[in-house]
Length: 159
Image (cartoon, rainbow, N blue to C red):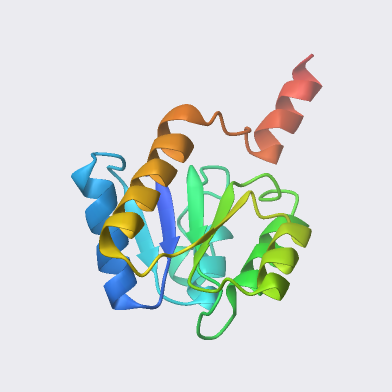
């Protein structure tokens, strides 16, 4: 990945079947040219914070949205979300929980940690494709994301 390459969606998904379905739905509807997939929470954090294999990335060039599963190897999705929200550089990064867990505790914690949205993956194929399509339409075409914190802060200093 090029250091200054814009990523539209960071998909954090360890289930290959769900990954393929999500990518298929997004591409079918021409919603994302640049999707980057990571398969565990530790790799997601490395990507977001430009560490390890992603050290050449710029933290100030975030994905337009992170689609984050909860049940992940190494670091679970709720912990990934918590760390994203705790860092001022990434605190305003749009994060959508896209998970098979409909457990009240997971939903409550996700919102407590600052998730922008929580979507339970439907097992029905057409329903899943429609949900991903609508998700992509909203987050990539309609939503106006905030500037990264360091860019917003530098604008404040210029005023």
